[in-house]
Image (tube, rainbow, N blue to C red; front, top):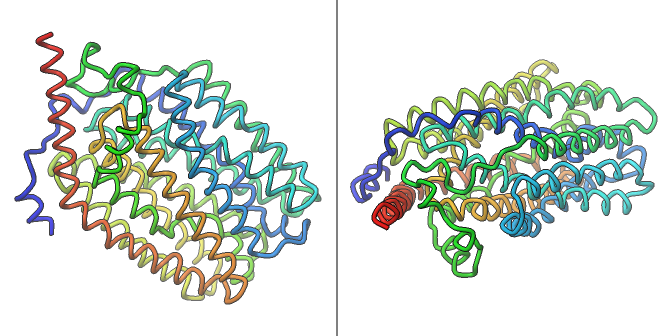
Length: 448
């Protein structure tokens, strides 16, 4: 229970002066936030235009689950590899290549002539995107300190949501155009390439550990200390907070609604593809508003209670999501507007999570291991997403998407929400240990 954890935890407080990021930090996060807003373009095309794609290539519903799951399974292996590459070369360059210039493969998806070709090209396109999340979150941790990381993470993912909100209705207009799905892939890939070029030209890497107040230039991890050795991998795997967060990301069904939401409205509720695709606009608006508001609220609660403030918010958000998902997917509503409102409310609730679990991970992991920690977290998340969406595709074919959503959205997310209870014990200790190590490094640097 929270009160027991509080009594057993070592001292944990927010270091002084951790609420003012360095000048230009918000502009920097805008650059790679813009990149994240377009680097899932191939997934947006598939999720929005799958009914049209299904007709054009004669695909079963399970193909949507297969396409989504294979892209996530690729991320399980490729995410950590991109992090390793970024330790040898510039993080900025690697990020611009894997999430930006790699968009040429997204454009190539538009040339597919059958399902096998589409699956192969889609998998290659997803291999680059796998590096975006770990590297972007690692950069964000070095631009913003512990007192502002909730807002910064919220801002980052709000920018990502803008891309979905703008592209969804536009892609939906291609549903009734001959080969419209091909044009969708071409446009999405071109935007990725442009965003990658902008990151390459204008992004400034602050350096690992730059936002930690205890670490001056002389106390930051050296290149050798940042190497991801097997010893450091084992250290990560012993981090109890990271393991609990990974477990929660494994048992999460929220992403299923992103992949199958439009198809659910078309096949289960009778909307046209073009009409159903317009749901992405209110969803994105609600997601952006909820993300930004959630980041501000979470940072304030964290300052009041550094031990458990973020954990309490995270658990409340997950329980609220479970309730909203059940109401939206298990009850048949009579109007299109009702679904738009309900899906928007779900998005507003879900959107608070990046502003909570990212800062939690950053606070419980040493600076030189954060990108690797995010690679692990996002790989586990991708594995869970892949298995879940694959199951939803097959169960949806056999019993309908409403039944699939009950088990793989509502029930699965409930398990994840209950699992978060373990953080009340693990997080205060791990975060305090990180602060103690940073203080030790600062003292060592001062006396050397």
